[in-house]
Length: 441
Image (tube, rainbow, N blue to C red; front, side):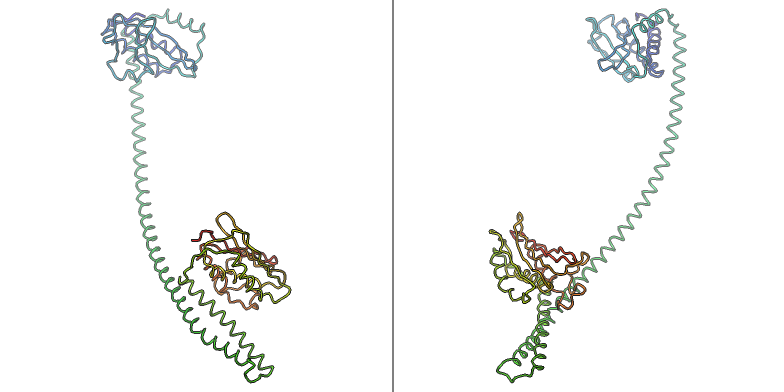
């Protein structure tokens, strides 16, 4: 098409709309494309006296199709550049700018064809060209009427969108009011919850202070009572020893039995007093470990000799295995020996037949010492309870336990930076494991 006079602008616009409709652009896109084309045509007619206009259907390698229009100016563009008078023109099409075509600089604009549009075969394109070639261009008045119709339709669509927007704004405002009300309610509830949490923390702090005070009072009471009881109990044991001494007046068999019963009971009481005093010291934090390098072979050898007297029954064998070479750790030798002695003593006391075995192994940067027995075993639900003060497994009261040895042993192991755990099943014995770091705390 030739663009030479003002009347040609209407023809170019009309032809652009017809071509856009022929290849399958949607109605709104047809109007946008025709409007952009008429604006570019008006700019070129005013600045370079017109142009030659050609339409083409371009298919990209990725399969996308575009309706492309080249407007070849009759004279060179000022400054060899083109900027549309209306900034809105570029938003009406997909591309708008200068391009090279057949050695000439042209103004090229394009609009993408919808993927759902029917494919255009060469015969169909030839048919469309023939139809467009035979159609007579409308007059300026007809094109103006068409534009007015399009404008009215656009105004109706804008009005409809404005009404929808007003409804959406009203709904959004109502939603915002609801959100604000909910936010206010949640803020009030959160504030009330925070006040309750603060009050709860204050109460917990108060209870914690009371518990600490009660624990300190209990520790002082245990220490004082143990200290006061130790002297008379020791005196009772000494008097019993004097009564049975060969230098004293001889006792009858009945008297000797009664004195031995007194001495035995006093010895048990002294053991309980000592356990109470040790536990009180541990709870009060008065035990300070003396960190030295400990060789487990020496500790095991000492325990093997001193505990030999525990296995008075031939049915129970005490086996203390030799630790492997290099089984050393940084710890308190006295406290560690006290823990192991306690565990071995308990195992021997509660084992009627079989064996009590102690062994050690190095696992990475830790040492594990295991004391196992073939005793009656302990149910799983009582594994933690036996570490509570004064607790005894039901049915074992005849063994004369105090229920303080294991709690004290666990406190000492914790003080040395390790753990004391139990694995046991009824009828399958028990195994206590002391896990300590090689490097100490």
